[in-house]
Amino acid sequence: MHLLLTIAWRNIWRHPARSGVLIAAVAVGLWAAVMVIGWANGLMQQRMDYVIERELTHLQIHHPDFPDDGHPWDHIPDHNQITSWLDDHPQVRSHASRTITDGMLQSPVKTSGVRIRGIDVAAETRTTTFHENMVQGEFLDADLSNPAIISRILADEHNMRIGNRIVLTFENVDRELTSSAFHIAGLFTSASSEYDKRNIFVRSKDLTEILAGRPIFHEIGVMLVHEIETEAFVAMLNKHFEDILAQTWRELSPELSMIVELGDVMILLISLIIMAALGFGILNTMLMALFERMRELGMLLSIGMSKVRIFCMIMLEALILTFSGALIGMALAWLSLHHLGQTGINLEMFAQGAALIGFDYLIYPFLSIGDFLLMSLVVVSVTLAASLYPALKAVRIHPLEAARDA
Amino acid sequence: MPIVQTENLTKVYNPETVPVHALRNVSITIDTGEFTSIVGPSGSGKTTLLNMIGGLDKPTSGTVLVDGVNVTRLKDRQLINFRLKNIGFVFQHFNLIPVFTARENVSFIMLLQKKDKKEMRQRTDELLEAVGLGSLKDARPREMSGGQQQRVAVARALASRPRFILADEPTASLDTRAAMNLLDIMLRMNHEEQVTFIFSTHDQRVIDRARRVITMVDGIVEADEHRK
Ligand SMILES: Nc1ncnc2c1ncn2[C@@H]1O[C@H](COP(=O)(O)OP(=O)(O)OP(=O)(O)O)[C@@H](O)[C@H]1O
Ligand SMILES: [Mg+2]
Image 1 (cartoon, rainbow over the protein chains, first blue to last red):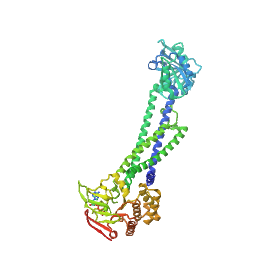
Image 2: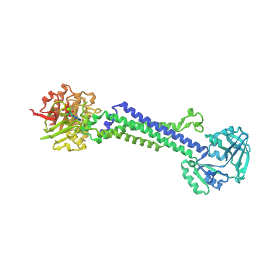
Image 3: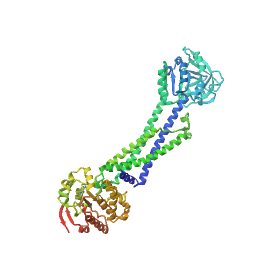
């Protein structure tokens, strides 16, 4: 073994430039792969955190019919019982109840279909970061009677400003159409213009008064201490309370969960491409090394070096080359991730226009230990696979190759 | 005592397309301790004969017995081991591992044979001194002349303590002085270590010093002459 290691090692240094290029290629390839994956992870994580924290929350509780129908009379039964249970539960960080109904926004200019969301300012601020979307005016704690917050886009469409009066028309729980006047207290802008056009915020206690004359709630958004516990917690809620439907953020926002899955597919693709390049690089280098050494290998076979040893010698060469590269690449990647995971990657200069609105300019790339180990394992497997062919070819060389004239 | 015996050894290259009869019913016997040269014009089958004896290629028909073992019957893997244990090889070119020093090239074969480390070191030094390369032990092949490289090859061939050494035109790429020097060394080793040498050559001065000369023409043994 020591003998084979020595030969393999020296053979590598026979062409320092060629070996160096391969090592560098492996290192840079791996570094790039880890960085891209880490970056994609960071981006996805940020997008996820953003949507969850801005409004979605880890999980939501509704009346079982509400998600599909959205009728105001499908409100959460035994609401107080559920909220006090949530208050006492150690896994819960905070929660916010919302009164929701669909209706019409009328102004002299036009009429828009909107979802009217009644929120409790204190609870909402504790639970989500929606208030950070405010771009002008005040949040719902203004002194006005019946304050409302609409998006800047909607305000522009209706040609309205802060302080203007708007009329909202919707069905109450008795299925009677009612109209009420609200006053614009502030304007918000979220990451999605579609969302902006369809949502209006009012105070829960104002809305519930008009809807039912008593407090009713259609949605409880819950933030847990640990996101990872969401699924189990939702299952427990559904078991513990009757006539409600608790759903995880994945169920509530299929597009978000699709982004996450898409990200995983992208990561897989990038890894595959880089690994394929790596494999061909090794294959090429090893075949070159093989062809220029045919006579030498023939001589080794002639004088009695076994095929197993020759096979191992070639494999060792490939392994040493890739491992050096992989080790350097991994170390660099780890250092880079470690550094950038703290400082973040600043995308401010690319963050022109709407594409990145709602995203933080700073992306914090990361890669889990598991993914890191997986990558290393894949690199090792790819190397082994790619060096197998040259090694098997070496074993098939005829000893007479050595005797052949120059 | 015979060490190599060939019986009706025949080799036909390309039997299907353009048959070339490289050997025709060659039967020779070589005894232990001989210093035999195989001579003949180009294309007469010298290399082919040596390859058959060394188990590097299979004959079309006939047998090669080494110490009574029918080499032609051995499987590939057995052959490699057989060569390692019994035969020392000196080729015309590409004898040495370029990334190894003279010393390492000689030890290499003993490492393959799993010899004792101490014995190995001692024998390597002894042999390199014997072939006159005491001062070039740590030189790599490309730092040595052709003659010096061939002497390392002879030392390596001897290192494994083979039953015999096969050398195909070992002096062909050497100048006269280097060639004579190599031959001196081979003769001395033949004496001192009682190793059998079988080698092919074109070189008349080399032929003159052989003790037995087998002359091949067109794949046939034309003359077999023992000298004193
Ligand atoms: N691999 C091969 N395929 C086909 N024909 C071959 C092969 N090797 C040798 N021959 C032919 O067999 C005959 C004997 O060749 P061989 O190499 O044994 O001669 P040689 O005596 O060693 O010649 P030289 O002195 O030139 O080395 C020649 O006619 C040669 O062309
Ligand atoms: Mg020849």
